[in-house]
Length: 115
Length: 111
Image (cartoon, rainbow over all chains, first blue to last red; front, side, top):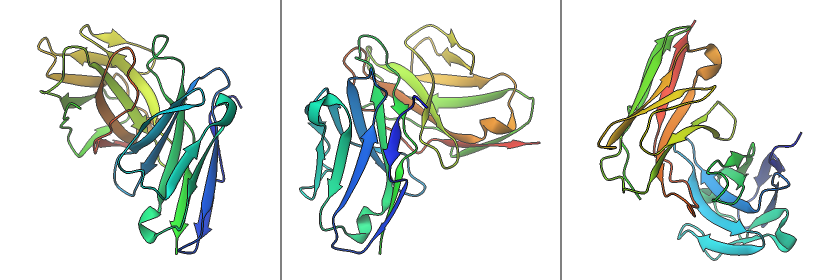
């Protein structure tokens, strides 16, 4: 499978715990994006990387959220001190440089439930 | 970011054409019009994009109004697998980064 993969697919955690999600983009893609989707809504942009540089962060990304992309390959999204409002699907996408293609390829998502 | 208006839901029958409209009256001159769809329990997938001219690919056709304030995604022969939420997304051209999703149109296909 050469698509975007995300791990885990499902995560249930208690309020106040920390969680970390991983995204592996398509290998030749240098751009990587994180989105969040709550039930019945379209995905909302959180942040994006070009190679290892984090170039944009949404105001939705509070200081409890941190994303990294060491060495410009896989990325992790960590949520500290989870709250029930963090329950959502977290989607990762990757793309080639904008000069080559405008298409973003999405992974299957990680569904987070905070109890 | 340009604001979009799409019907909340549409319904069609299998093997019939489907026309999904989108209004994007505040689109800027350099914004491309992208369409993505999201099948149940999956991440969104790219369908098609265009700037000014109508576009065709193996999945769909995109008809763009001459003033670019609206567009229509055309599925020529709908199948059950086309049941999904369809999002119209005006997006910047070269150098564009994030996608701004609206509510989309939930398409139901009847057998």
